[in-house]
Amino acid sequence: MTQSPTDTRQTVAEFVGATKRFGEVLAADRIDLRIRRGEFLSFLGPSGCGKTTALRMLAGFESPTEGEVLIDGREVGGMPAYRRPVNMVFQHYALFPHMTVAENVGYGLRQRRPRLPKHEIADRVIRALATVRLDDFAQRRIWELSGGQQQRVALARAIINEPKILLLDEPMAALDAKLRGEMQRELLDLQRSLGITFVLVTHDQEEALSMSDRICIMGHGRIIQVGTPQDLYDRPRSRYVADFVGKANIVEGQIAARHSGWAQAALGNGVHVLVQDEPDDTRTHVDIAIRPEALSLVRRSDPTPAATAALPAMVTHRTFLGDHTEYLLTAEGIGTLQVNAPRAAERVAGGHDVGAYVHVLWPEQTGLVLAADS
Image (cartoon, rainbow, N blue to C red; front, side, top):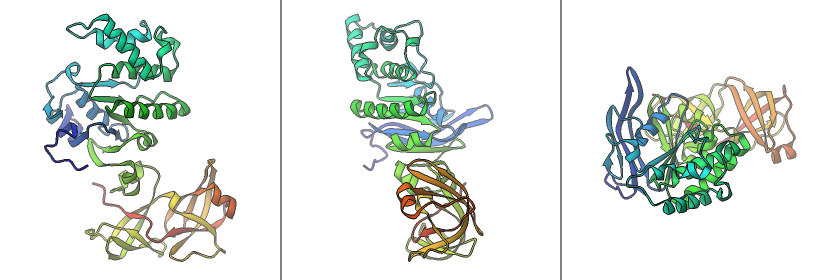
């Protein structure tokens, strides 16, 4: 749904030119972003990119040096964290080890003034624990729980206050890979059942791709690109985004001709490929991104399908990863390429050994001309 600049009904929070400086360090640089009510939004980027600073400005732990942060259309720059309709789950959960699970979950309610009746607090604690499937753990101590269970306690403590926005600061960083996958699914189920806006900070691209309605790619304190996971994967606007979201082969090309959103580009080995292009782009020397799964391999003696470019290459590494095999190759005049071959294709055509000379097949109208990184 398209939002108008004044559509507070669909916008739960907004950054308007929000800038944060710590002395000489510019941590967040003129952030402009509207967060939609009920969405799962992720801030994604490497360490030091500004994603945590943005989250802390929304939470109330930091105030913008310039610009504004709004929640429900109200500027909250001077509002303390405890008065904002948000709750935060930290990377290390910040649970009280001397309290039971129930006491941890009800802690925030017990701090409210005027005081809530004890029976109301108890009822809400029970409901919150049921929501995260910890009904039978109310009297356990924190140190008696697994990492995943501790995370669910932290979530229950956050949602019991019925926040409009739940902020998640890399909450799964300490979990092993299998448990992380389980918790990602549980978080999604929880978000859908509650209808609360979730805002996640992560440096894990797979985590952001699998969970988010939209992803905000951060770099050097700025927003580089915002979009759905599929948009960012299929149409990254720059080398920075293509490199950070999924895996991409990025090769140099010389534009030979353009027509209706497509461009014919000559690669370093002289082979021409037809790739997606922005209609108003006038550059001749460009970077082109193509995903490893879009390419395929054949032996040099095999015929090349129509409308497909064949790039001579040699296999340097072969890694079996279960559902696919990852090949690294040195392509003549181009450099290193990665090709992900599905297991079904490997079964039919057979694999390729390290040292084998092959053709990398680049289908016509595959690949994307990238905008220049600023």
